[in-house]
Amino acid sequence: MAQRPTPHEYAARVILPALRGLVAHVMAGRGYGQYSIARLLGVSQPMVHRYLERGVEYYLSQLEAEGVDRSVALEAAEAAARALAAGDHGLFWLVVNELTLQGRLCRGEPGCEGILCPGPGILSTARYEEALRRLLSIECLERLIPEVGGNLAYSPRPPEPPGSIIALDGRIVKTASGVRPAGQPRRGGSRHTARVLSEYSASNARLRWALALSPTSGLLEALRARGVPVVRMGEKAPPAGVLGVLEEAAPGREAVLYLLAANEGDLESIVREAAWRECGRS
Image (cartoon, rainbow, N blue to C red; front, side, top):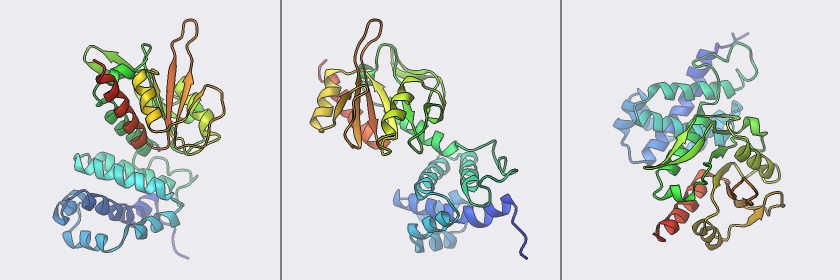
């Protein structure tokens, strides 16, 4: 009978080659040449050529056969490519670890938790941090942030309870020089924004992101221009990829509009348009 591989052997023989194949395709799509990809991946140029000869579907099928969801595999490839491009080889190996933990050899198996890092979650956190960085870079974003601050929430696999949703354990706050995050992303980091995302993703699992904003004229105009439905807190929402949930002002509480979206790209696009409209008013 064949001996069961160790977690390290499983990662090296099964997970790593498939991930490298996906990363090679991601980097080639971004304009990297085969020699550059080889240097970053730590393999030969002929090996990169072989990776690219096989399509993305080949590597996704390999990982899917190991029990890794293909959306997670694609997310892993993007995170790994960003890490290598930035010279962060430590993060690359954390991504390998995350996929290994999700593979069938290690799923629920005691002793697998500490293969390369203390535990899972690096992919989702890396994706959250990248989305937050892009949002915070938007000019005039401070005009959309509530006086009490905002927050960004991400549910990797909705629907999830608020305690499983990633958000800042502080807030997005306005400063004299723009906006900045106060706090760190973690699961259970938010009560209000995560609760709204949890409630509405329970009836529409496409909704994975939520951003707490001030319901300014520019934001409401941007939502109307795109045909985005806006409902009041507690109202039933139509099935949509982007949704606005308005929490009206009350004594001691300002109004907040929670912008919910299926992906961070849609969220960023609408916020950019709303901020542009606000900038135009100055």
